[in-house]
Image (cartoon, rainbow, N blue to C red; front, side):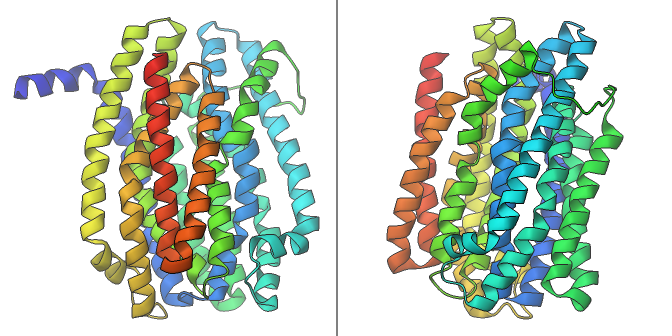
Length: 439
């Protein structure tokens, strides 16, 4: 038995090394994220002002995830890998510039539209807010629209790091982003209130970018052009389904935010606190292992090696399932002490602790399914199929929001977590069945 484990480790040494680096940097990011949430909970409590801050991320994050974040990863890495493996350095530079400049242009235009329409959009996103809370939401949204512009550059550089398996600088950037938010909450809140936290958020985004600039080993000359070359057109073709599909999680939580704004003061804050605890193991385990496996799966597809593809996919699937299921059990049984110790005190009272713990308990059920969905989706991306995960994701979105709306009527905030679980089961089961059939 020990010999088999040793053999497996040696044959997967590079995989475990990359996963370990990503897992450790992601863990550091989430430790700082928990510290951030602790500062938020004790300073503001479960109140409308923190609801406004959390809700203000909705539109900037939606812009970022529609046009940049997941779309870049799915389409950029396979094409960049093809170009660099063929040593087409000029074409690679043109491709990077086109992706970077095109993303910046689209994000800028979208941000200007949201900036102008923020008052009208507030009536759709936070219909249950008071006029004063809506005003804070509008101001914070407009300030936070700077972050998608910064992340457009940072995410492009980050995908170069992923393609070259340079995982340290890719992973550490998220930790520094949270560090910037904490600094804003601690040092600027006494002077600027919740707006100090928003300023810290922008500072954190700049730190996120700076680390990826430092870590970038691939050198190219930036030029302010968009070249509609064959490679960039191929990128746009691959990106279109992801433009629709990647923001599905953001759209799901947009639906949850709308519902939560009508429940009671602090409901959005409680939802986000519980979600942050749930997302830690998903990103540390599921996203980390999936991201590490992605270049391996991509190369197997490029080499038309179906056996290696299935082997890498099966190994990573089993590893994610085993570890994420264990993490879910631990979080479920320790949810109340975790919330009490890490968030309780100050303005965060026993009622808020109880509701957050109850919501986290339901969210814990979806840790294995969400962790596995990261890998399964990347299996499709490696095959240059970004449409299937989109269609599956849209179905899960409808189920999740509709279920949440029904459950929330009687269960309150924990009902939103039940809705998320229903959508997650559907998504993961369908992705598994379809990818297994395709492989």
